[in-house]
Length: 417
Image 1: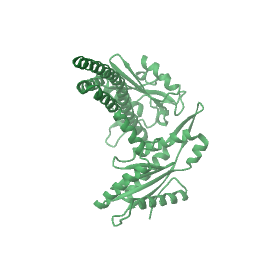
Image 2 (image 1 turned 45 degrees about the vertical axis):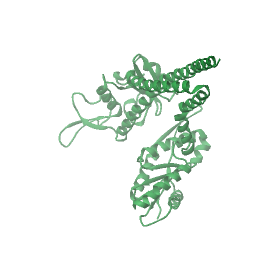
Image 3 (image 1 turned 120 degrees about the vertical axis):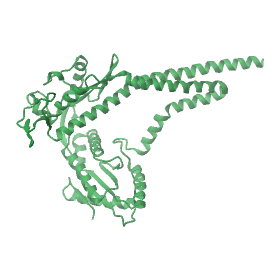
């Protein structure tokens, strides 16, 4: 009888182990296959932002001049009086605008593992004409979609993201129907699916070994231990996402993704103490959006949220990895700059202020678009090496400088003295 009960327990435990572990295994494999698309999107987004940043750099300089070569002839589509010049050494130079620069990059990458090109339904340059896949995707952007698109075509991942018309594009598109901010085309990126398949296959092999170990543990420990192990297995499967979510809730501002008030104070106190121990310089910036209430009142809080997110992106772009950025509250942000003197802090603050002042935000409301501009006021305060103050005093000084900047007319940086 005992032998029969034992055999029944072993068989039951085996069947349950196969069902539970096998089912979980199949779901994991399905999740891993879906994750391949997300990995492809992340890779595409990274390349897209790199190209977009490169284009912005070119645009911010009004184009760049390069020597005329066989591969780089004057851009016949660029109608400017200063397209071709001769430098002091007698070399013939031609201006390369963002579109022509991307064309050059595209030619360099053609035939490689990654191909990047500018695609348009109404191209100025015939080589930028959309292919059949791009012709299906580009109308989606013209209809208002702003998220990138990823698709697996055969053994190749295709990625495309919208490219709104900017001021620098008008020299070539001045006769087109497009207006500033409208999508005139997109950046199309292609890369072999095998690159991501290798990563997914590696994860599959790793998960296979882990699930085999779990299966053996469940079977040997019995029904009672199986229930516990099954529970822990499910918890472990979600632990990474759960821990990340908890960390975000605890430390990050839910809207902008920067440190919240409490987390900023904690990080600043640690950095402040380190600065005191080393006797190094340290500065704090307090930044506040000018007339932000008017944005919320005029365009709504959703538009205000979009403005805050865009402002944070610009601030981050002008900071170092060692700098600490936090949302102090509402439209006010605090920035801690380790190893930064008063003069350097002022330069960083001005760079941020000018960047924000120059940017134009495109808000879409009720099927209409409106461009708005935002300015910020900034207060700066440096911890003097001879002082032994606490971080709250330093923040208070920066806040006082910000208050004076507001009263002095806004859109400026003032240093606490």
